[in-house]
Image 1 (spheres, one colour):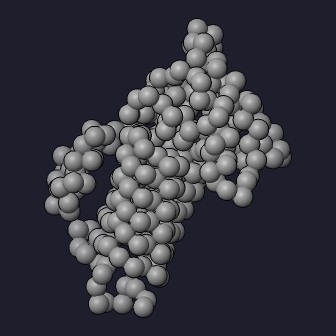
Image 2 (cartoon, rainbow, N blue to C red; image 1 turned 180 degrees about the horizontal axis):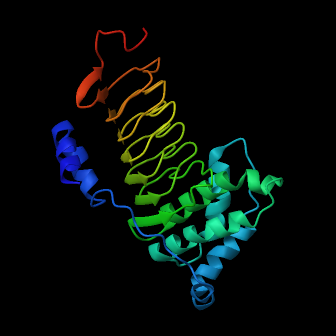
Image 3 (cartoon, helix red, strand yellow; image 1 turned 135 degrees about the vertical axis):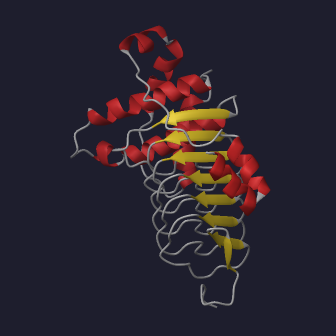
Length: 259
């Protein structure tokens, strides 16, 4: 952990400071939510009720999907601890679904928007959530403005349209990490797939593991730090910087980009 922080400090001191808000990458023990926890926690029951009323459907606008969830939880007074407990319950709810149902196929996207709404609407600044690795979570951290530690994997769009704050993902990042990101910092401890930093405008992304193709595609601002291997740099990059193992690779007159 100390060596990791020292590497970040050499890259950029401000990234290192943001990293310390998480206290370093630690594999947290799996949380268990017992039936008694639910029965004794009225707020947690309210969150489950809001989830059940969230009749998720894909909309033309991502903001509409997010707002549908936000409306349902607006008047619930919950803590960051209760958000964490609710996130653990999602695995159980997922396993009860029929794999042939539309609700099963859309579950990961519904999870992403619902948790994003819970966190952004919450009164506290720091959240820790646990997601089953089998759930293909999409758009987690949508419009994020808080500090989040996530144990689990992201399937698509981690930190989409992120405004500020921090996301540390203790797992793999999937496709399009930080797409259209406006600010803050995302740290992915595992591997990510294609299009990391797609169309990002500001902020920082640190990828510890290996990364796919089209890094920074359409990037207008911000910085990306790659610590593992990567498959290629994207086109249409208009500004700011990409580093690989501490070395600046964009902008550079070395064929890493197309004019």
